[in-house]
Every structure is written in C-alpha cells, then in structure tokens.
Image (cartoon, rainbow, N blue to C red; front, side):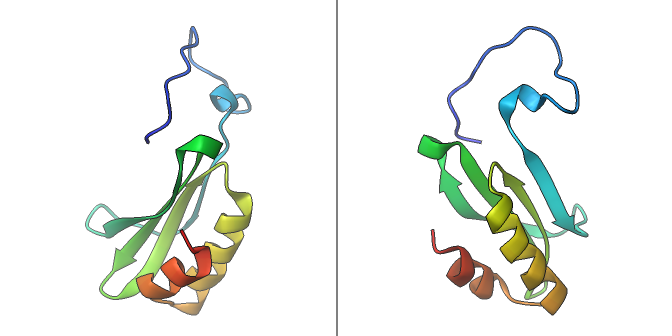
Amino acid sequence: MGFPPRPKAGIPSEEEGWGEKIQFAGRAVAEDRTAVVLDRPDRRRFALAYVRGDRLRGALVVNAPRVLATLRRLVAAGASLDDAFAAVQI
C-alpha cells in the first residue's frame, strides 16, 4: 500500500494488526472498480473506494477512521466517486 515495510515476526492477532487499523464499509464485489481516494504514506493512511457503475459501493481504509465515517455516509447516500474525492480532498 505504499507504506515502508515494518518487519515483524509471526502473524498478528486481530487486535494487533501490526499496528495498523484496517476498516471496511459497504458491500463490494470483485468486479467493482477501485480508486485510491486518500494516499498519505507519510502518516500511514490510505483509503480505497469501490465503485459499481457510477456509484460508490464500499470503502477500505487504513488508519483513517474519520475518512471511513465520511465514506460510509457517502456509500449509504449512493454518492458518486467524484463526491468521494471531493469529501476526502486528497
């Protein structure tokens, strides 16, 4: 995801996650298009939007709970990818 690797031994538990908080909202399928709507490797933050047709269907975020809240509202409202870009303001 563009973050510098932080090597650790073993597999993390669900709570540890190697220090990263990964969250998902909405319902996405493999056929959905994806677009990076936030990319901040300096702050270890990342957000990916899932789009079907012209509507936002889901969002995956790493270390960005406020962005997830915003994208979750947009998914529920049937917003477009352009709306997601505008709301997140890369």
